[in-house]
Amino acid sequence: MDQTFKPIEKIKRSFLPENFIVTTWDELLPYFENLKNRELHTKEELSNWLKDISELEAVISEDACWRQINMTCDTTNSSYEEAFTYFCMEIEPKMKPYFFELNKKLLASPFTKQLDQAIYFPYLRSVENAVQLYREENVPLQAELSVLAQQYGAISGKMTITIDDKEYTLQQAAKFLQKPDRTVRETVFRKIAERRLQDKDQLNELFNKLLALRQQVAKNAGFDNYRDYKFRELGRFDYTPEDCFAFHAAVREHIMPLQKMLVEHRRKRLGLDVMRPWDTDAEPVGTEPLHPFETGAELSGKAIEVFGKLRPYFSGCLENMVSMQRMDLESRVGKAPGGYNCPLPETGVPFIFMNAAGTVGDLITMMHEGGHAIHSFLSHPLPLSAFKEYPMEIAELASMSMELFSMEHWDVFFKNQDELHRAQLDELERVISVLPWIATIDKFQQWLYTNPGHTNEQRETEWMNILNEFSTGVTDWSGFEDYRAHFWQKQLHLYEVPFYYIEYGIAQLGAIAMWRQYRQNKDQALDNYMKALSLGYTKTLKELYATAGIKFDFSPANISELGSFVKERLNEMGVN
Image (tube, rainbow, N blue to C red; front, side, top):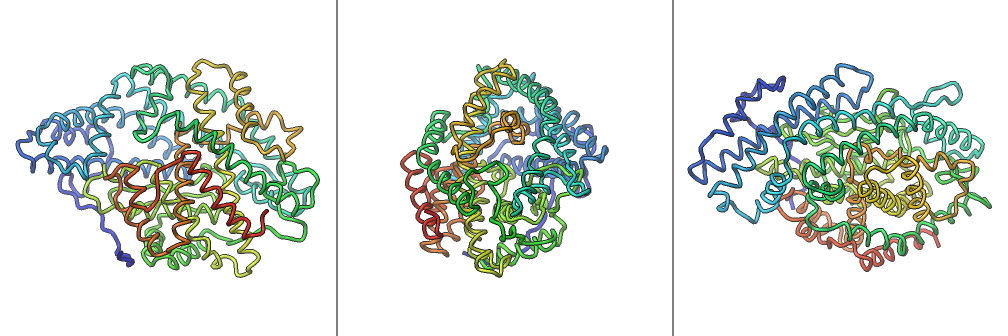
């Protein structure tokens, strides 16, 4: 497969003027009217019509993405928030009825059946699903939900603590939890816990509003609960809620013992009789926390070098992003929490947003978001925007596989072999520990949305039951019962993208399988990786995973097999 990078070109417009900028709905309306009223007499006319829809979608999507990027980069800028809110409330709701009509027109056309089903099947399946789910009365509710969900970032972005007379975001403060000095760790942990609890009632109130609106959306669409509605809306054609429950059980049986082994390994390294919450990321006395980089520029520069050791194409992608200023990596006050790669469908060069503070976790996040960016680049040449709207189960496979592929080249960040070994072990700890957390969050969401109308107290009780089910029991949380009872509030997915979490678990298993393949034949694994990502969503999930050389399978048997593979790697690294 071609490993050289060629800069991608912005899609040339043929339907909208090159200088067109999204401002108001009135400016967009004529283009929607044109598409709605255009007569389609041949297959060629249908194809051209689809290209025009794709162009319009790309222009609007890129504009909407920039509104969100600007707002998350600076939550204190009221004009950014107003621009985002204006789009959500004044433009998006007016577009949805038109897209519904366009989808119906596509399905009704006799020429649709003549489109190449080998490429169009997933897209047409999604269109049919969208038509079946659409309800006009949900349009304003969904707009309200978009605006409400963004309040989570605004609340979280204001969370700071003071350490030695200096203000830190909670993301920046987390690096102190790796310090060898246990007193420092405890002090910082207590400050973080106290700061989060200050907003617990406000976050509960926000979540209750979101729950009620989401349940109403589901009811309007003819569903008993939001869980069943959301499974359909997310296009989960390849698995069911029952499969998710099997995933929970398999993680508890086959992955939890590995996690417990890792926590015990850390406890012994620290020389502790009892692990406390501020010990879980710590290093022994005399061992300084890993500090792979100082600045965002150093992080991006070293990431480019790591990616280049895998494939020149990968480093070319990141270099292109840096040259176009498509990265904002460092944490600062007023910046929304979290990290993401945002595809920009018209220009094709995505944007990476992070809250880096110089930790190993930040290095891993950069590898992760870099994998997403590679996916954006590889799928950009596909002819329709809709082909690039791939499901998260394949999107997260791209990012999580890149974490594991890149590990052996982290010597770019760590010249000392012992430090490199520690960083690699840290990654494997994350790979294992994230699976029980995913099972926890997914099982919690299954309960949240199949029990509408529950009270805060009922929610807290159920959360603790589920959290305890997926806890190793090694760490002593006494004195932090209230903080632990509200621990779910730190998971932004619950607020901003409901039910988007099990995808991480499915993809993490896939990434482990990709890593196993990579260890057997590096070039073949990377070829398969690039081929699968370049297909976008022109194939089903099972076909995409097969192209990548692995199985779309999160059954107990497969989870057991992959768990054994990771256990062997951990044993090789001295963890028993």
